[in-house]
Length: 162
Image: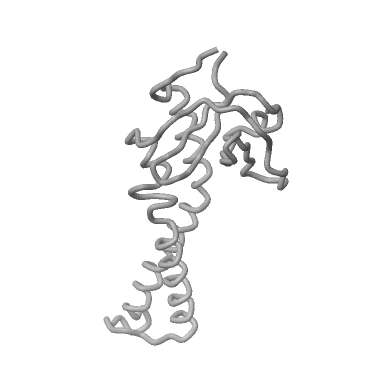
């Protein structure tokens, strides 16, 4: 059993990056759709097809939709930048090797919420997200886990190779 490791091995890093990309994909698709809706309704709002003239059309139904989609996009963008995407996100920290790893003993599990994320606790009381459900389910107190703590504070647990 390995007891020391400076960096994540390539397959471990690849696994965590794919895991993070998979978890953020729904958010990113929704945000891109909101951006597309904002741009599309803005174009329709600025160009009147009926009279073929350029100008701002105040179509109340379309304007309400445009305001709702634009606000939705802005809220998603502000909530996601630095967390889900962009500088200091989990993906960015892993790609630029801004993390620390340690081997820790499992001291318990947080209760099963029935859906992701699943957390393991170490002896110091820190909670780490398990990237695999089976790792969480099969973890026993005293088992050794590889704990990855990103620069932004996110914590992931992997079962080390034997």
